Image 1 (cartoon, rainbow, N blue to C red):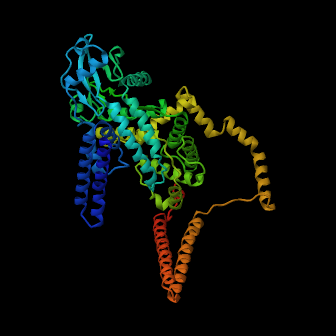
Image 2: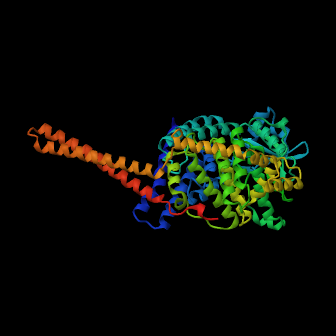
Image 3: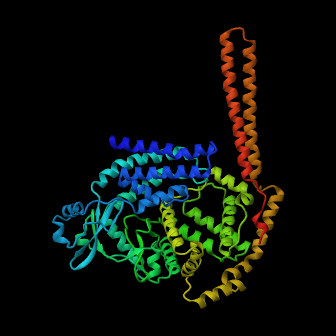
Length: 573
């Protein structure tokens, strides 16, 4: 009970701190004062998370990478949680190891370090010698599972509240409870160090043919669910630019390797590291990437993996100079991939989604070429508004960890190379992956295939030429069916739908005003006070409803003004 009270007391206090900058803005405070208030709130939550312990420190580490969720002032302060987690004593670590292994720590390890090499939210790492080899020994904090059992119940209640009150104004139909359940599953797996060893060995197998990726070897004979012994690999953080420069390592090569390793996990293997922050993704003196901490790993489900591959292939196919015609075809394939991955809700307006996909694909291509794109609301405003209001995008809970992993990799890459752009780096990677999927064994085979497609000397094009008369006959038959009335075409007009929505709101306002007027007339004519009082109450009630309807009309008009379509992307080549 005391723990629950402590958690909710902190949560309520933070809400008031977080709302303070918003109220200051309404009162006309300067940007400097507002930013200072945000930083103050961020420091408050950081201190509070550290006081609440491992579960909430882990939560802070997760959200510290979500630039799409929190303002920069919060991100900058919460990033300290990645490094500034207080550790426990070496004596306490030895006690835990002795209890887990069933024998004194000093009889298993020699030269066990008193101070931890690194401390994290769930445990810490000490160095030692084992059978003449230098090893790293990871020791879990005491009573973690019991603490998780209590804290995660409170977080589930918070997830339920978010599901109810999240306005979802960005068009994403987030399922906070599913996100919580996925996080809970991974957190419990993360405190099982034998599971971490399994994950690390699988990750090493996925990269066995990549000589610039290193994974420590695990010593299972001296490992338990709470103690993990692994090979010690001398490395340092990729954020240590000074040391990278002193060793003469190429920062742009390192940046490219972080992107390639991430893309290999997401696109090729479908098995990825959920927490590649600078403490878990390092570099050795030879420029090889060194991965640590495999407690939080996730695997894409078959449909998500297939859909994501289809999405990436469609996005990068054709290169930056792709024509509008080919881009439209790729947009359809991209939407197919999004739908297969479970991101697109059933019954969504496919035409509007394809327009949105085409806009973003053209914007992406323009960015690769260094060009700017039209404003999205000017180009596809009405379609964007419809998709946003209908909440057609539903991101699987796994995507939370993909976004988190991407944010970490993107931050590391930009720290290494100011021109780092994972979109540009992904182009050759995805093209190579697509070639493998197409079955090309050599560049000559690929060139011949492209020549066949360009000249029409291939089976699909020949088949199209042969069957064209039948297709033309079918089109003629369809047109005759339309003429005779046997076939009717259904057309959806988004503009008319919006006009009808406004008419409904206006009618509601008018009805409430008329009923309120009737009640006022009755109140003026009534001779008995009880009828007069009741009529005034009725007039007030319907008058209030009319006022609310008027407010809805103003909000509707304001929203419509944001999505006025003034330009068309199709007019530009």
